[in-house]
Image (cartoon, rainbow, N blue to C red; front, side, top):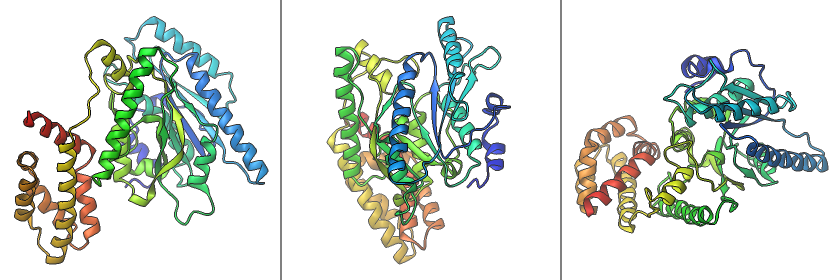
Length: 399
């Protein structure tokens, strides 16, 4: 675990340092971090909704005679050198406009001017990481500050900051959460076709999440960038934002969940509202799903109920074996594998491919004295990515 900003900076910030070197840090308690590329003037609606939520929060604090937390906004304006002149000009305009905002609360990061552009292999992950890393350094890495991911096409509820304050700062809390997700619902302000597709896609995401939860998978949360919030302490502990060109929110959520206990990761009772627009920015994700559905290269499709049945039975088996193995002081690897094969021959083949026998023996060796930590270690191995890979294996070989 990384315990200081100096250690995080040394181990995790080599790629982001050039973009934030010399920038004056912001002094705040809650940092909203937004990557932006070709987003002017749409992003102004996002900022407006955030400032309305901030005003609502401050009014509530005044009514209750409480000091509000200071909210700051970090916008990373980014592009690659290969992006069009139109995109570059749009980004320059946004930089200019952001320069007129209150610089005690707003900081625009220039990752778009010649000599400062992102590399051709980088995209959404690095764009988020630059903003988040700057906010992390600004905060001093204290356990009290929060980092909120946001997208430049997203509107928030007016109670957004009130809900965050209640969830993370309330004096009534017995134990403070370390990370969490808000709810979400996409706006229906696109074309009729985009709106129809996003309704179907969002329903699929939430259905999939509910089925994972029913199967007792800890990986049931939907990975959507603007819903993710964590303390700066846990940001460093999980290794910070990754550099994935797409799916960065998926891997970041997985890292946050692995770095927190079940009770320290919460669902925050407020919603964010992303746009249903077609997007060229990433090769997969919501925008890409919409464009792919429109052009016929993508089909919204649930995994089979049988796949969730296999998952549920496998997790139940893991719970039973963990308790029994700790009690008996033996890994019970053979029993684990034999009973997994009875659940599904395809599951057994998947576990063999993943070399689960040696993995399980190592997990048991390191966690042999505690059922809870052994089960947690199992789930950290059998994570979101492994679950999806199992589902794909079950679907592929069942046809």
